[in-house]
Length: 307
Image 1 (spheres, rainbow, N blue to C red):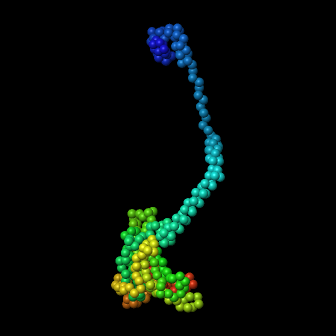
Image 2 (image 1 turned 135 degrees about the horizontal axis):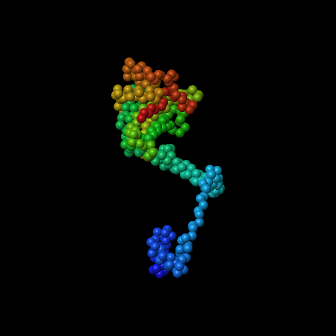
Image 3 (image 1 turned 90 degrees about the vertical axis):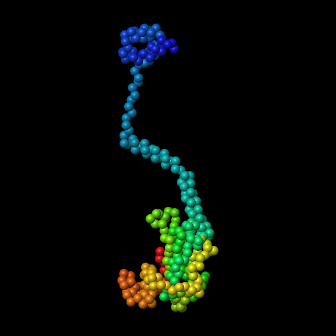
């Protein structure tokens, strides 16, 4: 492009707007009359641009129809294969959970499923207090270095076939499950101790009316496996007599767990004349018997637990 053409073409806009001086205007007109290229540029610039028609806003009905079409297309994409894949995924997850629970039950021997891996070890716990009460029951306080989520007491575990018969070989087993990650919160760091009252002997009658006497030979704490064992008490072990404050705590525990007959008996054994005040809000349950399957054991048959 010639230099003169470039200058003229730059001035064409001002020429079209009629803002050029007379001398410049005459120069532009003279040039485009003799320059075919610049004349073509001028004629193109002078043409009116085609009008752009405004697109009308779609109505609400048209919008709903368009959305309906989109949903139908999306629904068509969810084929039978997709549904089958989802069902298969759910089935796989369910099987994995069941197998995981069974495997953890076998490994940990806790029957807590996957949460059994959080069972506290004997290294985490210790027996802080162990006393014999006036009625012969044992008062026990255990502490844990970690927060206790669940306390499990397997009460009166008897030899196979002896559940409804007299035996001197019954045992009691304790386990602590630590707090799960989602259970922990700053305001509730978990219990670090637990209190128990263990009954060492119980009597009852079976359906035939035969008297049954079952005696406990040992009380143990277990971790994840039977090998991880802490002996709390065993038959023949000497235990200190409970001081008065422990006896009072035991009475409160009996009442909290509905063992009103035992609480009353303990008060009388301690010679407390005003024991009626302890029962003002609790009341005494008549009969003094509870039932386990088809054998009726006396009220003293169940261990008492308090956090």
